[in-house]
Amino acid sequence: MILVHSGVVTGIEGFLIEVEVDVRPGLPGFEIVGLPSKTVRESRERVRSALRNAGFKFPAQKVIVNLAPAHYPKDGAAFDLPIALGILAHQGFLSPTSLHKRIFAGELSLSGTLKRINGVLSLIDLAREHGFQLVLPQANAPEAALAGDRTVVLAPSLSQLVQFLVGRSTAPPLPRFTFAPQVPKAAGPVIKGQAHAKRALEIAARGRHHIMLMGPPGVGKTLLATQAQRLLPPLTREEMLILSKIYEAAGLLIPDAPPPTARPLRAPHHSVSQAGLIGSSSGKPGEITLAHLGILLLDEFPEFSLNTLQGLREPLDHKQVQLARAEHRLTYPADFWLVATANPCPCGYLGTSLRLCTCTSQDLARYRRKLRGPLLDRIEMFCYLPPLSPEELEEPAAPWPANPPSARQGPVGNTLPRSPHAQKFLYQAQKNLGLSARGVDSTWRIAATIAELDGAPCIDEPQVAEALQYRWEVQMHLIA
Ligand SMILES: [Zn+2]
Image 1 (spheres, rainbow, N blue to C red):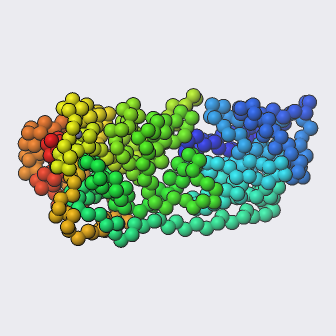
Image 2 (cartoon, protein in one colour):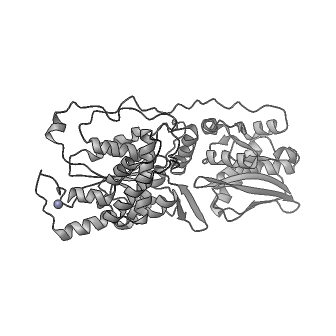
Image 3 (tube, protein in one colour):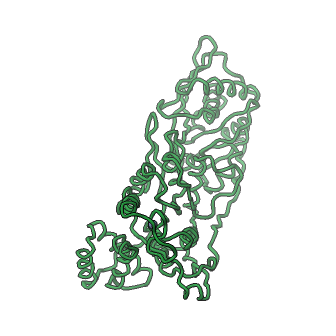
């Protein structure tokens, strides 16, 4: 019995598969156990033809292949290569030791060349974890180059790979790839006024505080929200690889297309289904995973169905999402920065002099329950954008954001000391505003981000006072 290692990818995670190949005396036959029947039929045909066309003989005996563990859903094509190699080793064309500490994955064409397979980046991670070498079709060279991993060996065809494994030739070189992240231009577009909202977004971006921008139609909520992408630091190479894996699982990474160079900004329409937003039971990642390491913009937040929004609770708490599938759970990352926009009331004009608000108090109460309901304290910051004042309309328009973020931004520490003044101030505010314990924690977090952004030595009263301005309880007083 010959043992060959291969791998399978579920979501963006790779798992080791043992391919056991046995050739026994008896009536000629070819049996594969552990794969769906349709895949088995196709794989048998390809392996048989590829071996013959590569100049080897298919054994006139009983060939039995077992793929273990059986419970992983397997896309059979990538097992062609390990199956063929197992048969060749059994016949003495290869030494079984040349297969040790290597993972083989590749689809065979009938002529014996190797065809491109999916999930290569996750297989590279798998090989690295186990300290194995990964042998891949040469057609997968672009992805292998992204990872820049020296443990990958490329092979154009079965016969060329056999030459390499018996030590008669060297493997083709891995192409070079230099990662160049997209760096935001010196300054953003010209946006008039709304200094308060701009400052709020800068704080929210630095501390990755989820934020809601509220205001009547036409005050620039959506424009500011989309430009907030410029406030985030450039993508790192490590992050580019994670995003590439996600896009590959979603079927968005086209072979030979350039890899992602910027953080994602996903803005699903409010009619999006829960499966579309969170991910589907078939294993397709949702918008929250496509927004990983970037922005999830929920424009017109109250228009989303409550049921759909409920699905955000778990991912917001755990920065990942679990999708239940028939056999096992599938986990995708979902560490996104949530930016939402909303009108202050159903008609949109509450608190403005533009037009009279026509909403009843019941309308308003229902609307606010919906705003707050499903996500409770998970949205930490709120900011009201009033219509531009005559002064703001007159002032010279400036580009925003003025400065791109520095390439290196560590996470906000929360290690800054809290002054006794600040503690006393927040204690008073908690009583006056009826802040929950969670609201108090949130305020400290926002204040810590402000202190860090402003280079303050500690969290003092001014930082707590500013942080409180962005709390729901205070913003509601401002509007009503
Ligand atoms: Zn209204």
